[in-house]
Amino acid sequence: MNKYVLEVLNIGKAYRTYKNEWHRVLSWFGIASKMIKEQWILKNINFTIKEGEAIGIVGQNGAGKSTLLKIITGTLKPTTGHFNIHGRIAAILELGMGFHPDLTGRENAYHASGLMGFSREQIDAVIEHIHTFSEIGEYFEQPVRVYSSGMQVRVAFAVATAYRPEILIIDEALSVGDTYFQHKSFERIREFQKQGTTLLIVSHDRSAIQAICDRAILLDSGSIIKDGAPEEVMDFYNALIADKENKTISQMQDTNGNIQTVSGTKEATVEEIALYNNKDEKIEIAGVGEQVYLKLKIKVHEDISSLVLGYSIKDRLGQVLYGTNTWHTNQVIYNPKSGEIYEIVISFMANFGVGSYSVQTALVDKETHLSANYEWKDLALVFSIINKDKTFFTGLLWNEPIVRIQKNEPN
Image (cartoon, rainbow, N blue to C red; front, side):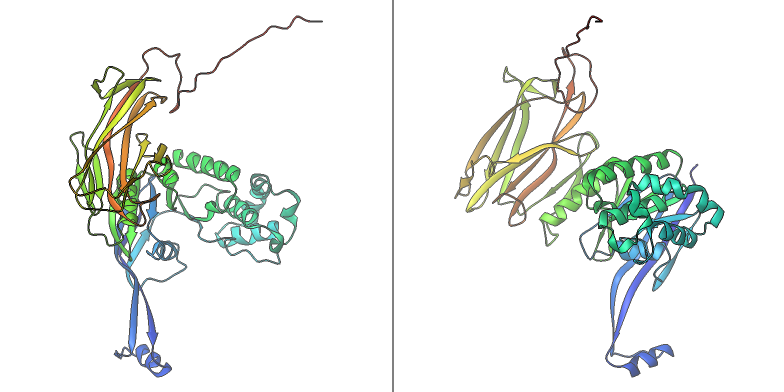
């Protein structure tokens, strides 16, 4: 049974403002005053993390994500509550990880590693590995002030992961680095996970959260409003962004046990959706590369100025494989009236790998859901792909090649 490596118990963080310095002094002696104002950044945060778990922290800007991580790493003191940590933490909370601009990369690596509790001998043993992994060449011997943001991230990540930590905490830092180093970093993170490292990561990258994490925690206005499977939480998060007032979001379990997220103001809704084959037969299973037809029936409930249908196809982890909408295909429905019904047929080749897939639908007014979200529905349809007649392959994409082999005679 996995033990808890992190317990967060009723954590809260408030910042106080005072009308004048006298009120600040009075507060030191426990004398309350109406002139003291409190702004709570975090409220009643409770969760536990087991050894080896990977947890994603998501939420809009200002939700309290970075504040929570600073409290957990000890760089910020909570106003209420406490937390228990079992194991060594390595954290990258901000760009440069406290590097001094006048010190070289090598000197900063020694300094940062020392602050993490490593001896000079331990740092000596890995300093060249840090240099090699960061791949910044001769810049390692130059002052950090001449580094780009990406170079700082490279050195910071190399230092933080020189020794495998029990808990690795990352706060959006890797989003600054280049794509190559992001791939390299996530590969190291996966290696650490296999060895038992617990991961706590803040990211707006849905793909990263769903590919790496076992759970996701959604913060909103300083409180946890969702804690569960990454796809379920990210679907709710996207719906929360689309539905700014948070009054029309619902989640329900479908017949297959999946959690479906639906949001929107309901001026228009998808009444029917199904997948068909070339014989116009409704299907739930298609073959790799088969021609299929996605048929939808949309009903308008109120007069609106414009109607756009968007759809995307996701893999079983909820990562979007393909998506578009009728704004981009120049097929906007203008001025639809209440009571009108539209049938839309989308034909495509099922060029996917073997597995389970889902369709997400969105009814909006323009190219995105940010101005008007009539209906956003995740898991609107679930279907499977099997390999009936194609050469064996692995992966999510069917892209069968033509392979030529030629034998050259020796001269």
